[in-house]
Length: 304
View 1: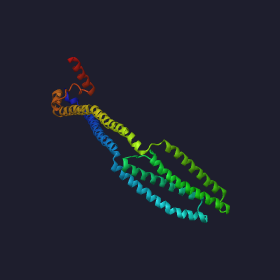
View 2: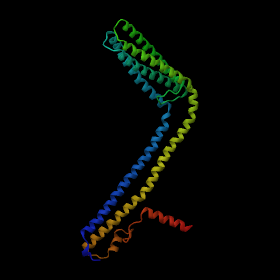
View 3: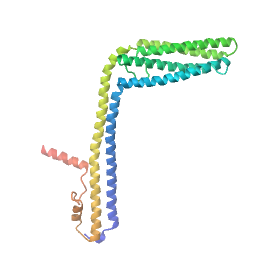
View 4: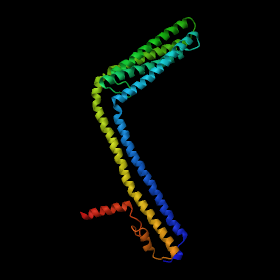
């Protein structure tokens, strides 16, 4: 080999290829660590879903939410007196009064339902983490708040009619109160129809036992299925990572060999490369993962 013909561009080319494959290998390694982190996250996330039904945890959540709703209701009740006084003197409209009563109704309904959920949780371990009313006991609590709201709306309607008779409010105010009263009556009728279709809490808990088993199976499928997929991806990426590391060594050994040959005048490039990278033949690049798989398959088939 004529060492005088070796140029810096040739050496830089092999070094550049080595750096490229090293960078790819490091990126793949980071991806592998990310997948491992994802597998750990899937495991613990599924575990947290599975333990969401603990009675103590749910009781603490109910108490915390109940305290927050009670504080809001106290604030709204304090504002009620000011709004009603303003309506009497004409600084507040009937819309303001109705809106405030509706907000208080929503809070009363939530508080009643939360208190009922708490009682059922303590008595029969009933758990409902949704806003939907699933049992008759919850619907009764909601109907009680609706009854109080209907009484308040009817009182506002009566007051609006009296004020209209005295010429203090317009007919539109009376109509607005009438529409709200009709809407509340419709809501009450719909709630009563739903009440007839709902089970009692004890029946719901008995039926929900089967669903808990299904949920447990589903959660474990998510957990182990997700981990299996991530481990499968890792198994695919690791050979590619190793292949890029080998290629980086392969090209760097060529660059080093060319540099040494140029500086020392040593002409046996093949021997020098084998000394720098003894596990790789100079004449060919490392075997790809696909080629390795083909060789293994061929070896297994030949044994049969």
